[in-house]
Amino acid sequence: MSGYGIPVSTVVAIGDKPIENGLWVKPKVGDILYSSWGYDQTNIEFFKVVKVSEFSVWIQEIGKKVVEVTGWAHQNVVPVDSPEYQVRNWDNEKDDWDNVNPFITKTHPIQRKKIQAYGDAYGVSLNSFSSAWLWDGKPKGQSQTC
Image (cartoon, rainbow, N blue to C red):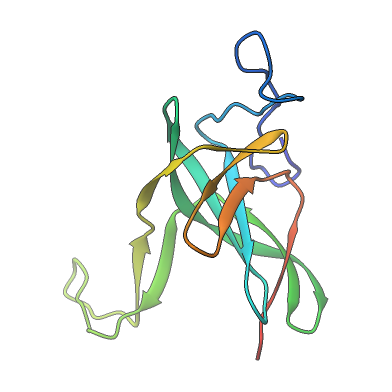
């Protein structure tokens, strides 16, 4: 377990022998993956494994929180175990009580991804420009352009 209340996976061998020359982390529900990508800034995204099969994991993006400001427009972040996020209510959608709120809460979709060996761990390809790997429990650095 990391110091931030989010579990970190443990290393196990698959079957009687590990994949390639080392141990491999077997995917399990609750694992946290992270993605780091960007051109003129570093974007960090976290994902939680919600289902596992032999060759696939189903992941859902979760939130993050800043644990340290390391410089101008630079922070260290860790995951927050919630798939919900808020967006601006541009269409003036009404809630259950017929009120129009400036923000509405949405939930990130669940995505099925093929498991890929990555060193002694595993990861998934998210799209043409980013992948996600098993989180090591340490804060990750992100930056923004202003």
